[in-house]
Length: 393
Image 1 (cartoon, rainbow, N blue to C red):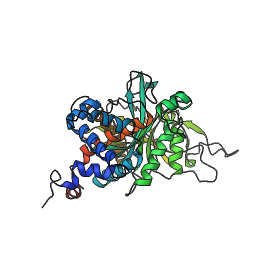
Image 2: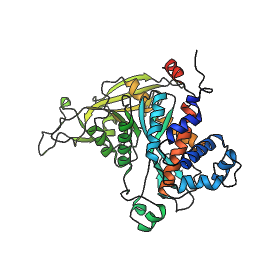
Image 3: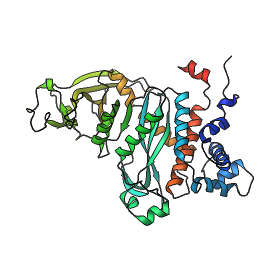
Image 4: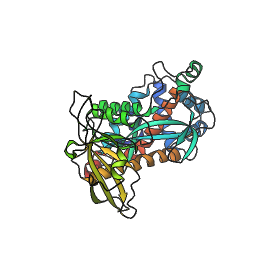
């Protein structure tokens, strides 16, 4: 008989909350964590603390207690995220680990980390916080399990701002690529299954080279969108390199330049997408390696590729991958998973209160992101019983 997860207490929201928050040291913290999670799932529309409290409690002090739990209670969010990663991984079979951004617009300038920045997705500048997240992704869903808050130098170096926002000692201004590597390290330390390839579109991030190098040092497979000027070196078999001298391993070229003319260096093939759109895509690729490989390590070969629709034949992005032996359709399929993380962020905005946090502190932001992510994670995985997961596989 197939177990119905909706009536099985092992897959209920209280069971999920108990697993996530069992590490919280105080009974009242565990209580309000469960209440807050239930309220995020039950409240329609804007998720103000007052509306959350009203949806689950008649107590006149519930709103104050929820606000205290998220903004002032000193609980550690990392054990909660570790449990969330294990829960999600046990209910899904992730194909990849996605790195993506959540741009959280703010009206004032007092929320921790808020700053003015250009947002490539909209083509405009915005006053916002930026969260860097890692998602466990399947073909149908991506679930965030850890976050980092981008702190500009104006926040990291100002003692009064740090004190007011309760930014812990040792937390400073780090570029997005460093946060991205820390997120993959988090998952690597908590994953109980074979790690998936890291997939990210950080082409607008200046530190794409550092991200690729960091993943290479960690021996992690990846599919990373890189900027047009990303430097690569053609393989030795192409005979287009300078003689090695002074540590040079070859002639470094801009990635996009390899695809801008018919050089005969690239390999082209057509692939069909497996999604509902059923597009036919042209994939052009060439084998390369990185120009700054450490001299004590032999250079590793990568595949640089572009993807264009059959109708336009104009690539809009350049990608670098370590999966040189994978089929083109498989690698292209991984790039398309990023639509799932973007969908997850939109759903968290519209249905789970991502944009509705009323606090301003660094711990409060992390508490809020943890609870919102947990609510979204349960919405995508809570209904899956062990039998249903095995049947779906």
